[in-house]
Image 1 (spheres, rainbow, N blue to C red):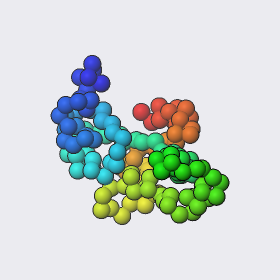
Image 2: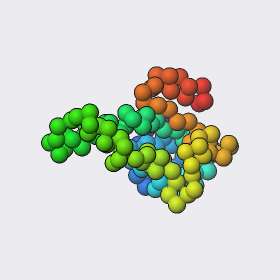
Image 3: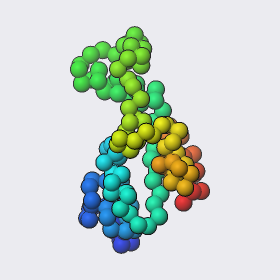
Image 4: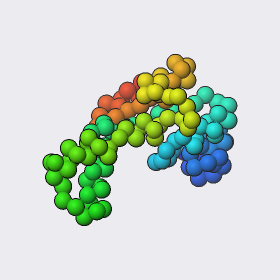
Length: 137
């Protein structure tokens, strides 16, 4: 991005998500709820996209991590308990705007369609997601 005079890699950041200089390519691996204030300041057309893991894959990954951290054994009973209890749909909260009434359905479609994200791909279908994304850009 820097080679093509596109900011966002390391300078002019409003916060850790969005640069105030345009055009820009901004990226982060964190909750995006803090990025909305900066996005509203952008004057050029924007395209916001993300990728998600399927909920069961994400929950099981978190279960394996938690068991590793706690030095506990992995078991089928433990997995079922985890999926029925501690594992919640936090990915939705990760994507939504802070203090909003967003629903999972309202996140897609981009601003023109009244949504938030122009595209949401799946990690488990990364190749197919990138092909679809290429048609939208």
